[in-house]
Length: 319
Ligand SMILES: C[S@@+](CC[C@H](N)C(=O)[O-])C[C@H]1O[C@@H](n2cnc3c(N)ncnc32)[C@H](O)[C@@H]1O
Image (cartoon, rainbow, N blue to C red):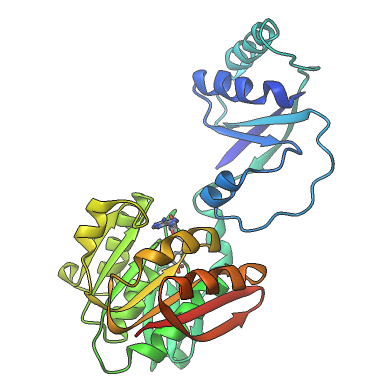
């Protein structure tokens, strides 16, 4: 799909007004470049754990928007953008407001990442995108097929791999019931079921993950009744906590982010059966101690801490 990119030179004070004006004109692909650091809340919503140092914020901003380049005339739309921009000058300092257009780019928002996702193995598990063929040398592996769609979880991320290794280690032949908090594409639920879990319950904040997870269960030949998946936040949603249940699980896995796992830690022990295992990752290395302390304060005993790249997995047990 071809897109045309237009960039407006403006100010940080005007950027929100500018995007709102563009959205009102029906433009959806909007990008803002400035040097304002993200707030903690923004960071956790965007699943970024740390950011590079930014140069000082001098109040400058570049607001870009993308229009599909399907040959249709965009003159009227650009006139409307310029008019909207001039009207904004009555409300806020807009800066130069100069609009430049750049080369047509080939952008496929949803599918471009697929180029970077190819089959790989973790121990005897083969994780394969649904669109790739299985190679002869991999035919003896435990096959997991994944199409994450727009949800997180191809299995390639270090944090997912750290969790998969721990699931391999702790599922054994106990046929545990597993709770997968932050299920994303459903990859950890599917790995758990393929490794012998008797049932899984998954939760995520993002409703799209319910679709991806259910579709991936089906692709992997897993009966829908093996999994229940709910949208919501286990940290403070009493209704979700009820649905998920108490002392139901031999294993809880949560691959999210340190800043989410810390407030979530207190609600984990109640979900676990006695002796149950909590496997968690999404923890960047400099937050390891903070998460470990939160897990211990919640009453769990830390059994293992593993590292892959800059990422950490903590595995703990309910006494
Ligand atoms: C790093 S992804 C992990 C996806 C998948 N489980 C994996 O291991 O690849 C984190 C997921 O957690 C979800 N999430 C973030 N905060 C959450 C919360 N408080 N409760 C449940 N899910 C949450 C996100 O929407 C995202 O799908």
